[in-house]
Image (cartoon, rainbow over all chains, first blue to last red; front, side):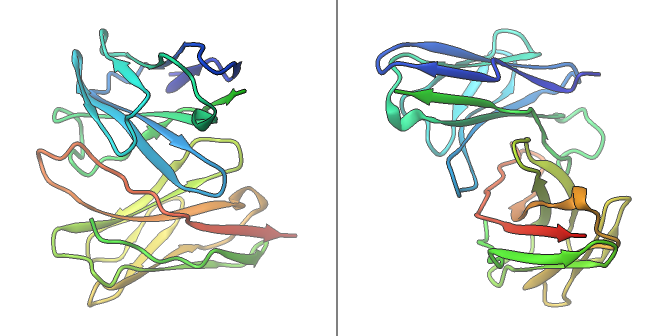
Length: 118
Length: 113
């Protein structure tokens, strides 16, 4: 199992450009999450999904959109990138109601995408 | 979810036990204590969780005080690979929960040779 993978690992954008970050998991997890982490801070939740075709806002959703068209993939989009979106982005997944140990079970995190917006 | 307080940093000698404290004085009865860690440039990694009983797994032990207002994560024999930021998180666990994790600043643990 590859676990949770993220594409790309690094990206530099100019202000106003758009891009999509891809998160993929091969653990058949129902729940998926997108976080951002800024220097010296903990992770903050952007959006999450509790299943294919469903998404919801987290703490800091402004400027981002997400889609969950396939169970294994969770996409994070930036329509018009701003310097304030310079950050490290982490994706995570977790088993849903059918999983062992639910609702206590942990989140599995990807390696992160380092995004710089100039 | 209850807030947590952790020291910003601590050092530990390799091979010794590392005891990481966490204060969660406003914890409520249905909130669990979770610990994650984040090694530099990697995503967070789950360590352990508990409600009121002490818990142990292959990575660590979790000691929760009787009043549940504080807890201690114990790494029994710290290695250099345990150098990381450790996050103590308190969250409600229920069947319809989507599993919200509220990350604070954590404790930077440095294990020295």
